[in-house]
Image (cartoon, rainbow, N blue to C red):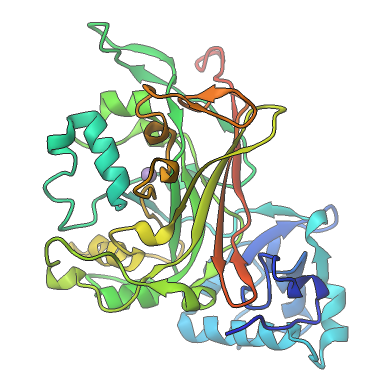
Length: 418
Ligand code: MN
């Protein structure tokens, strides 16, 4: 499908991340308004709360936009999702008879502050990028044991903290933690010295489930996708992760991009998972293209310096789709809720320039890399701003997510000072 023309002129450029084909969902506030749901169109946001109050959006008996998050809409299920998308398209398409009524409900994006788009019910992070898992496994356990024996048979993950998920733009404070240097017999409590990022996609569950669901059902239950940065304290992780997996290493923050790009908008970009080394068991078998062709990049800007692109890769590098991860998540009976967030796992490609974490880019700190401004990095330094971007390239248009960015603040001098 080519670019769909809107009467919002800025939505018709081939470069805007938010053409009519996209219609991503976010929450915004302005100087005059409290946080509320909105839809990005070009360089504007359509105020969904105002559109519902004025009767321009009417999806039945329930008011969906009285609350500043998208969970209520998500819980309504795919038929209502489709109805809303059709209605928004009708309101914003070139030649819409309702243009005059909709125009006053547009807010310039430049005047808006973007907030968390959803209430995160629970957060799970997976480990489904083969190049990433191979790289990290090689560094932590040696090339012989790089991939854990289960890795090619199930998507593995850990239960993270919903409370730690923050919207793009939120500053990230370097954590303290218990560290154990190989040079010392005993651990010490210190500020993290190996603070890192993980380039990931986040899938958001829309339709709740109770009990095991198939891959096909899981795909249908996913509402949309965001960019996700899983901030990671590598030195805390190295000491704590065996045998129960990451804990405090991943508890500082997880940043997500402000706009939820719906599964409907990503439909033209579906692609297959890679060839399987072992046939997957029936409950995880691929039943159609469920990854997406989304170009991803990471930039790093030291304080007061220009940004350098440090990695470029693509979501299609993943071994497991979000649908397979969600299906696996339910096999033992765990209910899933609207607003559950599933991190894909770090996305790295085969090449050195395609690695989605500084741990891999600097090979555990052994090979510092150079930024365009001349500085070198092994891990994230105080004042650095890390930004993830994602773009799906369509026929004369692109689908964007809005940046997922965060600046790292120095560790507190004493985290227990009251
Ligand atoms: Mn992760």
